[in-house]
Image (cartoon, rainbow, N blue to C red; front, side):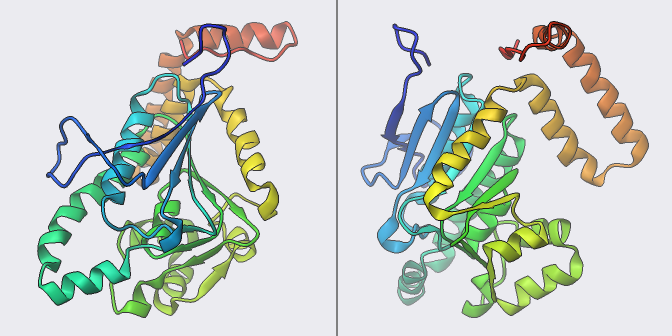
Length: 294
């Protein structure tokens, strides 16, 4: 939100944890661990996975805290684009294997998995359903669940030092976090099989060649490049983005007639917005449009 002097307000705060209760969630409880940070500037929210000493492994309350941050980004009308990245040298190394080992040893595995799964599923559903672009800023290794978290975003920009790994097979585990849904659609079936069953590391350049990421940039310029890219989307018409995002995902499994009908519906909706009028005026007046989301 803007400050009193008109400048963009910038925040960098720990995000509330939603605890371990089953969904739907009620009022969040503040996490004392600061595993997730959120920074908001110029209509762009950046969520940072903040457990660098464990390569941002998804342990303790990280899943719940991440969901809380995503819900905040979804509901804050001033936010138009969401970036997700990692602190330190990794994006996210997946599940915390040490915690998994401890749970197996204590016999608590089944109970904790029943707590984790609804939170994991809602994280992916909220990113997919959010009426705003969600961009993964992959600053380092993205392994297992971390890889699939990145694939669950709408777009991806990666450092030239990033690596993508479907590490599940190396641990004797089945892919989760949507890997078997995302990869056949992005890569095709043969490459999805290769990526999942081999457990090999895919470099940033190979991920770009395969279509897993949109852009690869030098590590030193990743943050600036991601923000510059996000600003282009933040300047766009939010209502159009919301409907277009829904159309893209909805029409993955639709026939042509259904897709055309939805496009016609969306066009009727946006035609009545102030942004549509502004876009047309700006074209005629040969100037950049100033979209407000109305």
